[in-house]
Image (tube, rainbow, N blue to C red; front, side, top):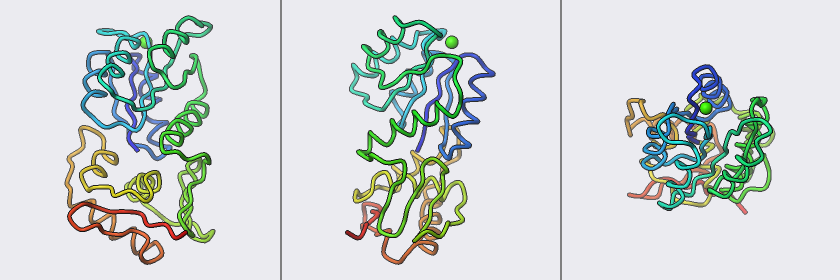
Length: 220
Ligand code: CA
C-alpha cells in the first residue's frame, strides 16, 4: 500500500513519512501543492494525507483538480485546529476524512487504515483468506494463528494481495504499490518476493495467472 504525504512543514512531513512507513506502508512526500497535484495525478496511491495550507497551490484546489480528473483515491485532509469552515470546504471538495492539527500519529494511522479498508470493501481491521490472516493494526500476518516472519517488502506484497483478494494483480501494479517513487524498481524482484511468500504460506494460496499476474485464491 502506497501513501502520498503532502505537508509543507518539514518536521511534520518527516514525522508523517516515518509514522506511515513504520506502519508497513510505503510513502512518497510532496512539500507544495504543484508537486502534490502532479504526483497524485500520475501515480496510483492507495491513500493521500493532504495538508490544506500549502505553497504553490492550496490543498482544496489540489483536491478539486484530482476529483475533477476522476482520481478517486481516498484523501484524508489535515486542517487547522477549530477551523470548521476548512473541514466543510475540504469535504465538499471530495475529502473522505479530516484530522485537525495537532493530532496523534496513532489516530492518523487508524483513520488511514479505515479509509484503505473501506476502499477495498473490507469492514474489519483483520483481513482473512482461508487460514491466512493479516492484522492491519499491527502489520502482522499469521497462518492458523501462527505468526509469519516477513520482511517489509514481503509484507507489502502480501498486504496488497490481501486487500485485492480474488482479483488478478499484475506485476506492474504490485511494483507501483510496494515501492516509493524514487526507488530503483526492478520488476524481477516481485517474482522473488512472491516465491518467498509461497514458501511461507499454505500451498496454492497465491496463484499465477499466466501472462497477467497473481491472484490470492481464498478457500471458501
Ligand atoms: Ca501547511
